[in-house]
Length: 176
Image (cartoon, rainbow, N blue to C red; front, side, top):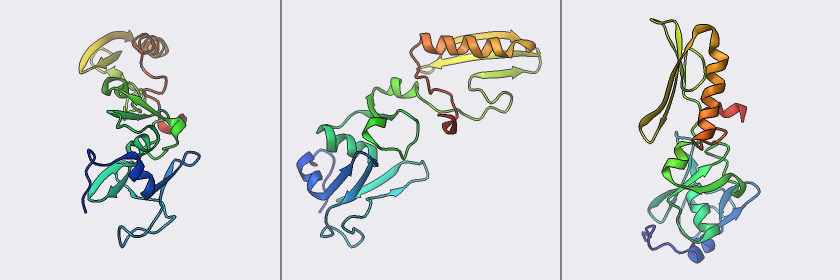
């Protein structure tokens, strides 16, 4: 039997899975739907992306999206993990957002020159370049003398705040 997202109801989902808001885990209520499903066992497995995936009647879902539907009764277009931990699916860590809002809560990308997202060393000019992109467009770019890295960091953070980026944006996950 295959049930797709459009046909899945909140009531039916609640007959198959239990949700614990304290742990953020979905567990199987019954064994009767699959040979690999065991009552009381956590549903799904962790994908290399860090998200937990659950296959339910032939359709694969991200656990946090199923939880949103389980609790609220509708499918959110996007669900953001406030603390940027893809496996932390406690309801207090999930929020419905637009794609643009979700992009404002991205973790740090590797940056070998500073370790700070959006600030790069321009070796030819011996200056720091601070850049902010929003919706695929550069909305801020400024050059700073080499000895003013702290000013570059402060001004970039202020501009991120002004543009409405989440306070976790650009931080290392382990520092949240």
